[in-house]
Image (cartoon, rainbow, N blue to C red):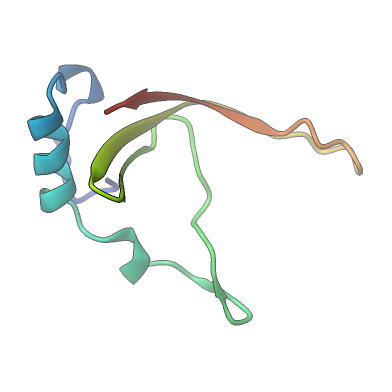
Length: 86
C-alpha cells in the first residue's frame, strides 16, 4: 500500500469487503516499479510492508512480518514470513 493509505491498519481489516476497498483505494504498485534490463522489479521489501493483491476474482491482503536476508554466497535460506488475509 505504500504511502497511498497512510492511516491503514492491517489488524483492523476483518472482512473481504474491507480488503476490496483497500485494493480499490491504493495506488497501483506497477506504476512505480524500477526496471532491471527489460524486466520490472519490485522495490526492496521491508518488514511492515503491506500489499493488496488480486488473483482472478479473489483479493488478498499480505503483511510482511519478517525478512531474513542472508549474505553468505550460495546460501539460499533467505525468506519472508507473512500474514495473509482473504
